[in-house]
Length: 187
Image (cartoon, rainbow, N blue to C red; front, side, top):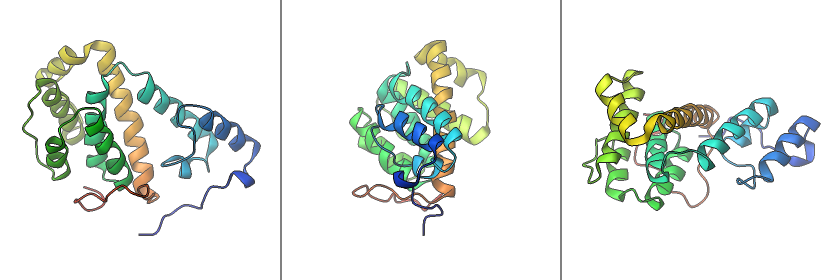
């Protein structure tokens, strides 16, 4: 499928785009990629999304392994290949068993060896599928992450749902070298 956005060119930036561009490339991302290929066409939104994303990626109190598991669940739910391709690999690098990632890719609940991963998965999938969480699921996640961590997890949901919808809507391709998932684009 063809992308639904114009290529972004630093040579033709407006002053507002230049400000956002400089902010992004001077930060930990170091370059414009993924959703920012689209979002730079709306620099005000690109700025807001990149600030939330920078907090979620580099300042969140959620342990990296659990955060990447949650992002993989979000990416799988919304279905853009680029989100799944990148964050499923980040999850493995952060310590999630590849067997767990494969089960998520196939749309199955994994058999978890680690209880905290099962809690995060159940919380994520309950919220994504039912649009709310029951008291027991909430309490289990609160016990694993604490109040601030649970709030940070909600920030990840906000950011990566926004990113996933932008990537899917505008058909941003996965980076070169990242395999396409076994599921069709979208759930």
